[in-house]
Length: 505
Image (cartoon, rainbow, N blue to C red; front, side, top):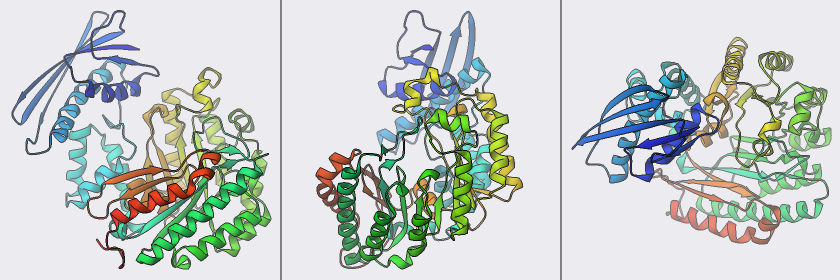
């Protein structure tokens, strides 16, 4: 879909307009000038009178003309960047209305294309805005529908019930530990994950670097009296390594991290059932780790084969039951809506199979075509459901979780996500993942250790966020883990300036 845009000379408009176009069309090109052989054109007119901006738009398509207008105020006391954001949002309002009328598609998230919409509502509520007023403001500012505003409110209420001190956690940190190995690479995946077979030398070197990071960061935290709220082992698949290697890793955690026995939550993603063994589960029990993920993604064997997961449906069921028998009392399962070849019939079967196991939490992902994934590179080989079918599948998930006593507790969105929908984490009340809440709402610093691990440093006072990532491939990580550890400590030193006392807000 080739779209000509006129009336906007600033290149800063191009990206937001492209992102909104992507909500409606699988492949689109936005040009800030008139091009030949476009599919349609949009002409904008902007009139700004001090603090008031009026935007009008005319969409022309095969002799058809559509019109939309929007009026907004601009706070001239704000920095120029923030003023431009207000203008950009006004233009986006008009653009979205025109595309909705052209296509007949209603965007329930309005002009929002960001990953964490619940942060917007958190911010308003923390400022003392009443929920009903906050919802109205979100509708006016972003065209979010009441349905999505209510979902956000439900999630925030659940988060604050699960973590009452959520807004006070900036004086603590959480730890993410990345294990970059898997049995095979899934077709939709862009995480740093390497097939573990034949890589034992890389694994040994990687684990040496990871132990160094854990000791060094742990010592820094101990010296400053900074507590750890949660630890999350992700990847990759953390249970790809051997039971002995897992045992040594968790021993390092308890030795190096401050007050490890007081960490509120430790999660280990055992996402690939083909990596779970009784021996590894014994190691988890030994170190009091009871929260794990056992991820089916789908209960259709043909789907698993198509996306590159080499375990069987029965293996998922057997390993879940084994985990339960061996004391894992907080198990999460991931399901993906919109996998190749699947529709409402297949997803209903997956939900029926999930009902037989009843994990404590269930994360329902909507398939996203990530730029670097195998699925995106060979999109013609992977036929997926259309927008209407995907929306029906999401509705099935919402109804099923409600009927079985699960409540939504975190939400995030991705670019190129099917149906412009969302990923939602559900749980039995009281079994929410604290780590998932913290990372999605960006309430505290998360220190990433290991290959490909991303750190997110949240300034305790200003709430500004600094991103920092370790190398994604094992060799680069093995060559430079000491350097990256030191760089993280430099950032931590800037955030927690009082180095001899516990950090305070």
